[in-house]
Image (cartoon, rainbow, N blue to C red):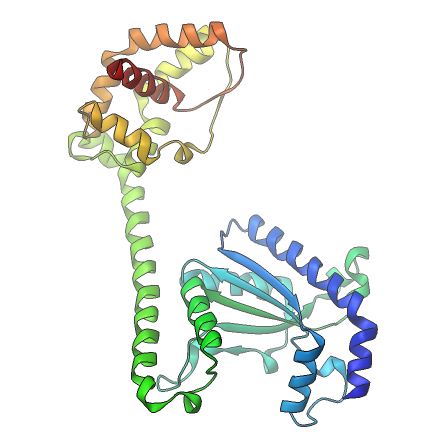
Length: 322
């Protein structure tokens, strides 16, 4: 034990550097893959935890390199199906020690506890050859990938102080199993919900064109209208570009299609996309006047696709309030 702990002390700075490097690398890879997660956590196992682990394993380890989770990375996703997306990314970007990795999602149904995917890995040689990674060699580290609900379960379980099936009092086991089942079902239902919303948004653009009176005003339909409606595009190209020589950029319209804007639209008696389109077309003359007033007062700068809808609604709502 003393030899391993000395090796740990001597390597502490290197391990902490690896910890920060992995955090930056994983965040960068997730951004490149366009995968949005709840949180990425990293940690270097502290000395007391390492000492306790060596004692628990009863002389299993001969050197620090035998301990594969000295540095740990936890990736917490929103949805269960994202665990596999991230697993694919990890397998592509790192060398995986399959013998020491475990998919706890595949545990027997009668096993207690909640599940996550664990990979033991090290950097691939092509990355080690880069100067910024060269000092880490084949140092192993652990990835833990779990959903936010799985993470909540694990944190609560840890706080309660019970780590395994046989530590749970028999009077509490039924409750523990029931809560675990509820969380697992919630994970499944959230994936279904995400899929349903995605299918709705995919079909929305065509449905708006063919049957706009049946499409209610919500975030998805308003976003589609602002970014794809032919009348909005023609007007903005004519006025913003043709008259004011402005550049139209495709901004994150979803940021503006929020509840406050939708409530304003509905207070104007507009409940579906057809009514919104008619309102927009019926106020194009007034909208030109508002835009002229705005851009005479402000310095010219790029505008976002859909800004004319925001301008019309916000100014009409202000007029109504007055």
